[in-house]
Figure 1 (tube, rainbow, N blue to C red):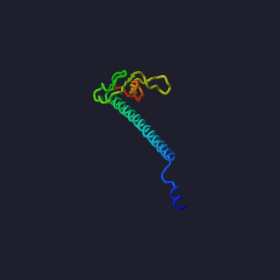
Figure 2: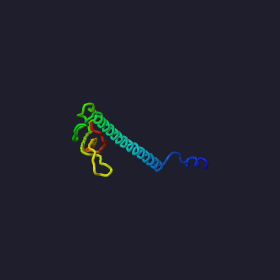
Figure 3: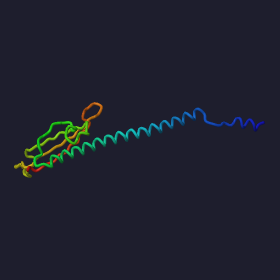
Figure 4: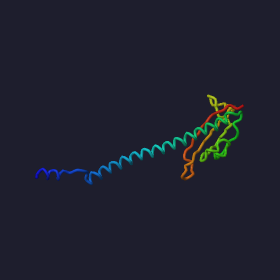
Length: 145
């Protein structure tokens, strides 16, 4: 008889508290992993936007350097209006060309006016409020002629 009672009093299975603890631990792990994934996606998207902006700025700078005269300054303009750049919506560029003396002699008395300074800026917009999110700026000096 004692043997039958001891078999009946043995507990098998999980209690409600054990199930709640296990579920809570599983939920915390899932939340932590999803947070890492979301942070990674945001960082990857930001890096992609910045890489595109750098490549666009380099392409525009190379266009200006390829000719003898770098042309005029360009105010902020949507880059998708430029031929060959139609796929880049949300990016803007501006070019500043300065043909004044940009190099001074070591003694500071004479200026060399045989150079242009060229600055290319590419802006990319925040999709939520349509304001510039970040800017990439390239600067160089080009000899005239």
